[in-house]
Image (cartoon, rainbow, N blue to C red; front, top):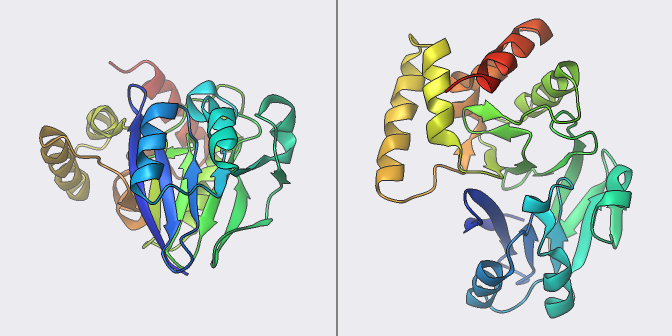
Length: 242
């Protein structure tokens, strides 16, 4: 079952994601952190919220969970390994577990690195990946809790998904990520084309995501890193880049 998907801008530069199974009308939010704009989005989509999917415990991804659960009676799903620091979970999941939204079936992927308990949700028939702060367009998350090796292997797992997969990440960091990517990979024609597209989108006030994973494989320096050492070097450079 194919999902209708749209990003909902919240906070300063975050996205929550609104998912709707058009056949059943079942609706979900991924990483809800600001109540008012998300209530407005849910109401505009029919006033129904069946599920909340959480990728990790940071407040800018979970802060509105309890308010939205109380308002709509939504079921909250998150990582069993992080249940102790997430809002109360109705469904605690592990790597490989299934999740459903109406007729749409997804799979949980453990993606540690940004945080130790980080997970992503992959819906293969759409196809779409809700990856929180693991993978960004032209970037990846900072290593707040995990190691370079953990993040590298999380990104390898993501890179193994089909090129058509929509990457639905948690932040609008793409334009700043493009500046770093061009600094380390200036001869990449696909990257230069993507950077120009990003500038145009932002000039029009439009989101730069979702983006197809195939585009990221050609342009994202962190996905293109050949090994853990190269990835770690890039991550250190990005942390100090301005």
